[in-house]
Length: 131
Length: 160
Image (cartoon, rainbow over all chains, first blue to last red; front, side):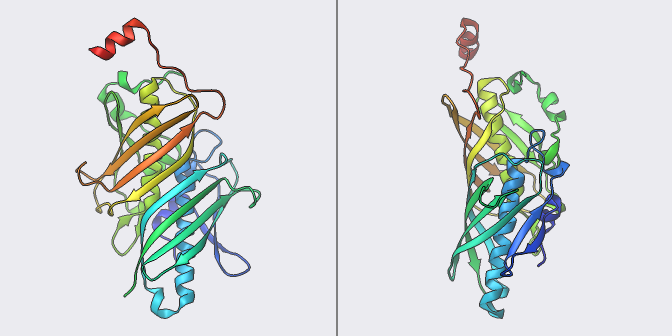
């Protein structure tokens, strides 16, 4: 899966879960620091968004070749920050709540050591433009 | 730590550069007033989210608006206190135009005991044609926000 240039700023890379769905992995580095020792909220938000879009591309590809070329445009995003992001690597994955013909509702979670203890969650609505 | 952008000159703000994530994205101060503050996010091909159109990803705009709304609180209480973003909602009204600097303007709506409410607008040249609208809530991880000073001299300054 090809990620946009912005993902390289975050140094985010794709891993695959056992079921083939994408999981984003972001190391801790100077470019994502907010206050000393912590991730910046914007970097966490960016990772959540890259994870959501990766999940959406994956789901569209699963629908078949006629969906693979669909364009994805963000409508809105709501992010809840639950814990400070510490100086560890961070993972994020998106879940498609509903993939409609024109709108997709996606949830994404970011975690560090323990997936059951998310550091942030996001709900996103995307406009899907199919050819 | 004292941090009072209202007493900084525009020149000083112009030279201010951020480290960490904000610095990596190229975010800098743009302008400020009594009850608002603006940051700027210059266009960069490194921030592209959609290679077909050259439009920047929405993540950098969230990062700038997270910073701008939190600065709006410091601009209001006139002191730097560590605070954490509780939640942030962004509506993408339209894509930012490639090659345009995006301006993030934020204001503080209310500072309560431990929670502060803000809103903001991102635009790429015309405030009346925004790129995004934001609402963000912050909190003090421990303790409470400092009360605004009610000294006679401060009240006089506010009237002037």
